Image (tube, rainbow, N blue to C red; front, side, top):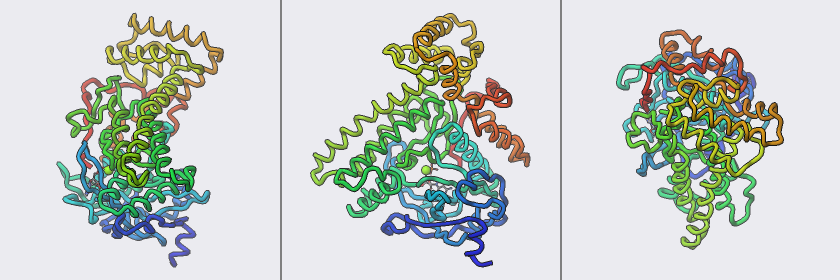
Length: 486
Ligand code: AMP
Ligand code: MG
């Protein structure tokens, strides 16, 4: 069958603008074929939105064994600060097939993760294991359900090969979809290894893809910094509001688009403690839950440094202008977080004491080991407090103060309750549920994973099925650890 006919059937419609950037930004490389590709998960709704026909898209195409017409595979070059240290990186086990133009005219990167070695693989095998790829699929789709900007997952394909980590594991490829894969680390790479022209081309390209509103005026690079800062502040506030811990917020894992990217050792917090860390490699707690907002600021400062040559020819002036923008970040973040917290508590207007009310709730949760999601859920559903907060005098007093606060606002009780239903998820991808789904899948039973994906699709629906997923893990399952062992 001709490629053209095949594409008409399957819906692939590539335009690979990234390849029009200077050559230093990528390496053209083909996926390394896999032995026996077999589709494990497929996101039909996302496929449809992309204009793809899932009936005719084969595991061969999703594994890289055959290339859809118009695909021009390449690996992206980037650098980044990993746990504070600058390193040259790049897609070591991922390839872009190209940018899919949807029927609506939107542009999305289609990336294969686990597609084999590239010039940036360093010592790695270029492959990925099934468990972590299914995990990324589940958590990224859960984030989408939670209305948090994120890369998406189109499919997981088993390769029919094994990968060697601390043990022998089945190999897999994740088909990832993103509004782009331009990272803070891509700018760091350009600033360190490219010319000023290269940096300018990358910045203009990024503006065109994500920040068209910045226009063409002289200060557009400062505008890029400002707008990316706003999106990052919003994103991290949303993470904090649902208890999401990214786990490895290196600058190469921060997308300039403001989407959550690179799901590795991420996990959701159960009991509220700001110092919570799940990642086995984050021994110092650099990326602990409570540090995420500050790390966001740290990463944006690295972004600003990379942009300095474009912001102004006079370095001092550039620093001054960039500093003003970065200083806004903390405030932007805090405002987003505060208004999100107000929504979680059903508050539609603002009062000066709201901050104290919110912080005292968090303090009670912290000291009494209260489950973050379920505490807000009990307030939303007007249910008895969960676990250790049940009958707790401090919490009873807090609730009284909160109820008085609700009564002082003009909005009706119904309006407040609706807002809380929309702001507090009935279900999050709890670690023990995700593990159970992965465990069953590794034994050939995908039904547990499908049920989990179903309830995570709309976490604000508050259905009876979702209620079951509020149950906490057996205490013996704690403390939970996640591994980068990808
Ligand atoms: P991550 O921690 O997943 O964000 O990856 C950090 C860097 O290591 C990126 O440049 C990845 O492409 C690279 N990398 C991770 N795993 C592998 C692997 N198995 N083979 C080659 N490169 C890898
Ligand atoms: Mg990464």
